[in-house]
Length: 329
Image (cartoon, rainbow, N blue to C red):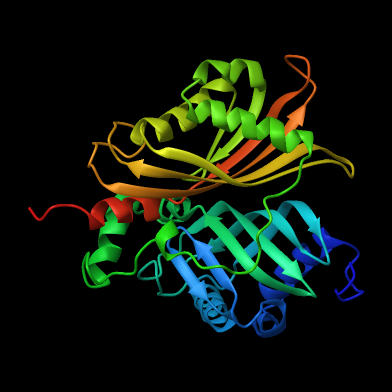
C-alpha cells in the first residue's frame, strides 16, 4: 500500500473504509482528497466530472435518503500501487425516501439494491471510476415503473433534444486508468462463460452454473438455480440480439478466506430489435453498461461452477435511451 495512508491494512480495507467515512460517517468533505479534482465518474446515466460534482450528488442523495447505508459485500481487485489499483466493489445499499428529491415527493418507502463500482486508485486517491447502480430496483421499490420513470425524466429535463444524455462510448473521456485486469484463471473462466452466453449458447447454463446458484439481478431481483440465470441473460440478449458484446475489464481472485471469484465490466452496443426484457422492439440504438461478479464452488462438473452471480445494468438508463428515440405520436 505504498502511497496510501498507513491506517489502511490493504486495498479492500481502503475501499470499504472510505465508503463508510463518506456515507455512514457523513464525511462528504473527505471526497476533496479521496477523489481527485478532475476524476471522471461514469454511470449508465452519464458522466460526472470532478470531485465537486461527486460531492454535490452525494449530498443530494443523503438529503433525500438520510438513513442511506452501504454494506460492502466484496472487493475484487487487481493492479499495484505504482501503476494504479482497480477495485470492483460490490455493495448492498439501503435507504428510506424521507425527503423530496430526484425520485419525487417523499414517499416513506424503503429500498434495498446492489451496486458495483470499479474504482482506480493511486497515492491515496480515486482517480477514475465506473459505476452501475440498480436504478430500476430503487424505482420499483419506491412504487414506480422504470419505463415511465425514464419517460418522466426526459420530460422534466426538457425533452429528447435537451435532456441529460445517458452514457455512450462517444462521450467517454480518458481518466488515466488503462488496465484491463489480470490473467487469473477464474476471471478467464467467467469471461468465457459470459462470452458464450452472449453468443446465445444458453445450453451451457446447467454445465457452468451450480444447480443451487444464487443470483442477484436488476430490479432488485434475487433468484435461485438455472431458470433464474437463463431468464436474466436470455431476456437481455433477446432485446438486443444483434448487439456487439465487449469485455472491458476482467479480474480473477482466489484465496483470502473466500471462494474463487471474478469481476467483469462489459457492454452491449446495438439496436433494440427483439422482444425481451425491454418489451416491444423499438429500433432504438442502445448502449448497455454492465458489471458482473461471480463466485465459484466445487459442485457440478469438474473444474468448478458458478455458485453465486450478481450482474447489473441500469434499466432506467436503457429505457431513457429508448424513450429519447421514440417518434412523436
